[in-house]
Amino acid sequence: MEGIQFQDSLAVNAITLEWADSIDKKVCQDFVVGERTQIGSVQDWARFRSILAPTLLVSSIEFRPHDIYSVMGQPCFPDMKAEEFTAMLSAPTHAGHPLVHAQHLLGGAKYEKVSDSEIVAVHQILAAHQHYVDIDQSIVAYHGHNHGTVKHRYKKNNGVWKLAGVQPESYWLEHDFDKIFAP
Image (cartoon, rainbow, N blue to C red; front, side, top):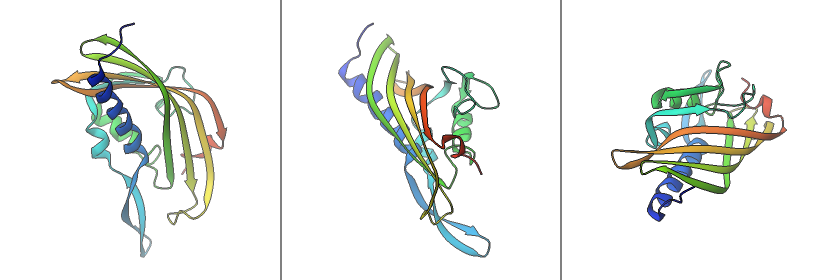
């Protein structure tokens, strides 16, 4: 296993932070609910899209129904377009759910240089989630946490590192994780 250069390490670490933070951080936005306008929150999906390679390998290590990237019973998408991945993740049935807040905490990581234009990293992850009762976000309906790892693939695209693969592996779940993305 060949190590990676310091500058490459900085670049892929920045991408990893952008991946987690752009999924987790929500910005205020007005929503019309019935006859009232309420303030809610949504992610900046353009920010998320900016770190992605044109196509990605998107899969789960082991297919399980609760894995967020296992869509329609398919455990692997070897060449998912970045726009499709963003649309899938930003859907209200996934991370784009307006009542769900999350924080993806990344721990230790190891990196492998596959080639001058490809790096693979495995990160420890704790993905904490809360599903609120309503848009006011004052009462939590459910909380659930996913513990495991996430393998990221990075590829150079026109000399710039981009995220080219996401492969989560769940070790165990806490609380009501299966209810987090329910309507």
